[in-house]
Image 1: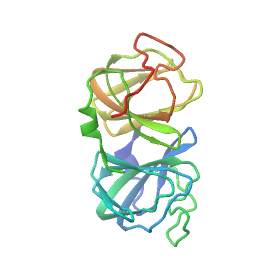
Image 2 (image 1 turned 45 degrees about the vertical axis):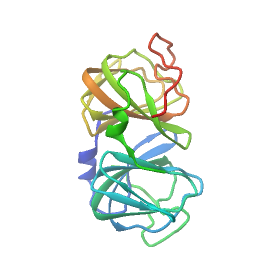
Image 3 (image 1 turned 180 degrees about the vertical axis):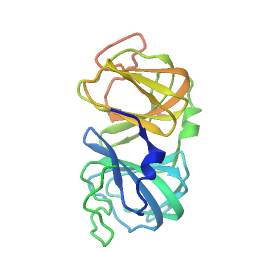
Image 4 (image 1 turned 135 degrees about the horizontal axis):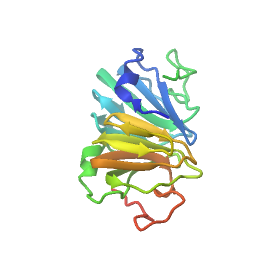
Length: 119
Length: 119
């Protein structure tokens, strides 16, 4: 049991749109990702998903609006809601969601990861 | 669905050791608390608990050691593990844990809150 330093964890990987696992609790997981550019439109049928921006700026598009998140801001995307995260510059996000969730939701694409490395 | 700004939420209350609810997802909750001084020794028999320091410094005492958390650092306390959070100065923390958890665990004390106000 030791402190998890977010800055150090982000230094451990470079790949964009590739979540890395830093903690598990109560059947949930805490993931870090570096993102830049547009992600794919997707939804998670069974899981709510929390986005927390640590650095940069994340825009989450919905079919009827967009929400911008700056560092120190977070948003819960309810299950079933289609969304597309995107970032104009390199942005660091922290995600809180159930274990076993796929980051591309019901879609399997070229960027879909089947495993989130633990760092 | 709108951005939750942590700084704004912390401005909404002053009371120490009194968690306030900012989000719910997947049967879990996100709580903010301002803390200063020593909390009580306690354990949560069924729930893991994530502490994330936003401002200040949090020390979590365990029976065999202590862990210090600075801003940008987090720690998961596994269920069943006795712990005592404390802070020498006013410290802002964010907690992730299951809905319905009591912040004083298996103990009911004068500071135990039966309800976490939503802000």
